Length: 301
Image (cartoon, rainbow, N blue to C red; front, side, top):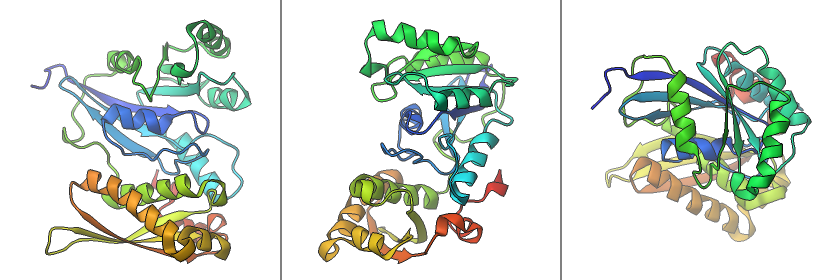
């Protein structure tokens, strides 16, 4: 039963690349909506995830990691991160407990210095440090900024995440339920499916295929056997990368498809038939027209 003093609001999640924003987001909504990789700058679009319980609804905006852009795609990612700070009720700054505060963290903190809403510091990956190591880490961040709340957490293990949620609820205003109770993301299924495929490429090809890969879902259709047929194109910048993704005798692309299909079936609740193709588009990350074709549109925000 919904609380008569129901609270709702929007919360931005920012941090430098690879601090665990997507891992935390997936834990919060109880299902995978954002892809995870140990490569920096995995998230490209602003992922909107929705947490709902009987007393509140929190819409989380997971942003691309804040970094210095090297091409048009990087500039899009940075604009997306900054735009997510507009019109929110709270900002969560996520940092890594297992690394000392550095220029990247200070750069992120500088972005929120003039924030007019509460700013919480989330010190993630506390499962990788001892309690004695944690206190100096907290002190180093409080010297940089007067955070409204500080929560040491582990997005992987779930430590202290409930307390952090309670802290967010405390500062949210009373408001409407924006999304249905069972909705966990505002992104269309096409987008999440393409992200799942891209995640497997990042995981399986490691350093051979960095961030010069994109995935476009061309078609999703339910057939007469109630199986979802999906056609998707993997886009790379060089012919050598195409060869790596296809692999010897098609072994790599078959493995990518098999692993991605499991996640997609869990998302859709249906059996999936996944067709993958690979296409070379030279320097696509530096061309605005191609970026827009692939769904990277800064003007949307």
